[in-house]
Length: 84
Image (tube, rainbow, N blue to C red):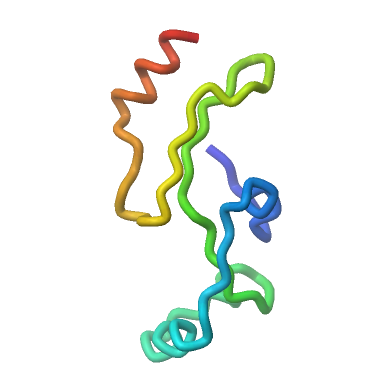
């Protein structure tokens, strides 16, 4: 589990996008203050990702999906970890 203040690591992995201005207006209408939540003036969101990294710091499995409702099946995580 990673807490990534200011999306610093996510940015290095190419997993950050800036909300378009028209979408920012929709967020504002729902009183969702992305910039305040991020603690800065950026309207950025990270793309959810799951990485399994071995002891040699090699990525052994990567799951990236811009649709935040789609997550990696836990059984795949367990199976991958068991193979390490």
